[in-house]
Image 1 (cartoon, helix red, strand yellow):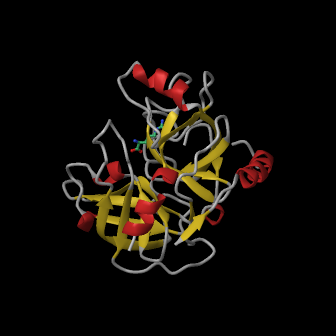
Image 2: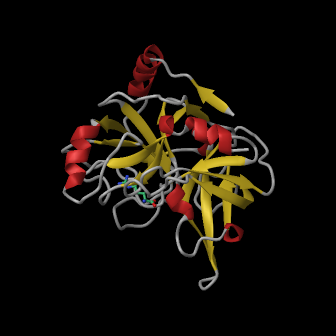
Length: 261
Ligand code: ARG
């Protein structure tokens, strides 16, 4: 498994690169899976509808193990036998390599200390991924990494293009900025949600218009090529008052490395 030791210097170098990348899910732009080869679609089968539907993103750690959000595997209808991933696909529900899920390990502290706390899960496939230019293992940030405030980060996924709108057929990406945790916590205190150190807030504060959204959950927050967050929740999407919230991978790297095996 690839763990990156992001130093502050490294972060500053990556900042220059991220800024140069086009500034741009809500408010994003079309992307190709080759740009994010560790990102996969997670599809769930709904027996009473007879359909498979992509509702989350996942991140490849090794040929058998992936990283996502615990809330993706916590719905009443969740069953690993009705869950599969689609790797190497730019378009939702289309082409790529489909692999069925063996079992998941949701973080034992998920949703305990506070709502959505420790929203992290690792899961194993029944058949191994075959790496290619569109299917590659990702790199997660080292344990204890703390992301600076007001720092550019990227989300990618097939989630909805507006808060209650349709999902995107083509992969989207968007660049936003991290928001200071105390500021974010005071915003979310209006709706009785606690933002703790296991969470990263990001958006365009007091502006809105860009964010992850429904269906992007479990997908990545990147600094450069390094996965620093997992899309978790938000009040609506791209709201000026309420930033989007991701699980902070740096709080869970040791747990991820110990459990994705
Ligand atoms: N919980 C949503 C999902 O299951 C993700 C919400 C992210 N929301 C946001 N505003 N960033 O797909």
